[in-house]
Length: 266
Ligand SMILES: Cc1cc2nc3c(=O)[nH]c(=O)nc-3n(C[C@H](O)[C@H](O)[C@H](O)COP(=O)(O)OP(=O)(O)OC[C@H]3O[C@@H](n4cnc5c(N)ncnc54)[C@H](O)[C@@H]3O)c2cc1C
Image (cartoon, rainbow, N blue to C red):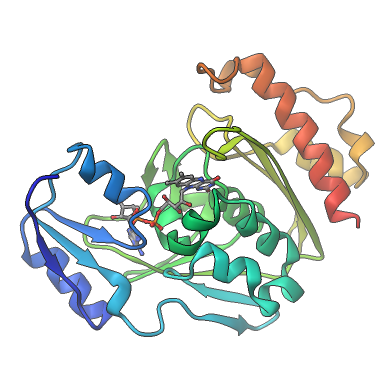
């Protein structure tokens, strides 16, 4: 690890002011991605701006019929929340599938979506539920927030504050884990919301999380797993690596999509 300064602001405005004032700042949430990166000397921030001292940033609240979940909410907190389990059970289940207990007790919603790992779970939930990302500067639809591999629409001095999720009529998530890392080899979030059907895929896209629009149309006509039988995802845009070929992953996406529909129909 290289030497760095450490700041723990007590208000979100102070965190943004630090991001503008110091050289080479880096935001620290639960450290689940950032600390290994620092330990391996893959990053050399001047100052870590730790969000852990800001009150209220981990709150989970009712927002209309849906939910507002703070950026510092830990995965374990979301998985166990009676409110999340009653309003959007599929979201609580997804949070409970992330990593292992250590990761779930430190990793945060804001850190996960800001990092936008192409195999992470929360980006699929945000896109599948048509969530709105509340930042220190604006509120963005998830469709505009995730812009590519490890890329988001966040500016250098912009923080994720919370995510607003509308309550779906029904939703389900299914994931095929990489047995070593537990990240998704393919994860599919399916939801029926006020504006129709959404199918969001993680773990497979060369450009990160994406919507499978053909599956959305098929499910709008017939919300059953069998509705996807005649579809196949074009493997030309699907990720291939030492864990699996593009064809294998494209097949997994279809299988996970059908399982997610089964979950949503419970
Ligand atoms: C062994 C292991 C297994 C894992 N398995 C899974 C898995 O199965 N599924 C899955 O989805 N994830 C998995 N993860 C990732 C984990 O869930 C964390 O969500 C992710 O690493 C982000 O960590 P964090 O929240 O601690 O953020 P940090 O590591 O602190 O930060 C990550 C990045 O986001 C930025 N950031 C953090 N918070 C904010 C904010 N509020 N606003 C703007 N930028 C911010 C930081 O500057 C940094 O660039 C795994 C991680 C590990 C170590």
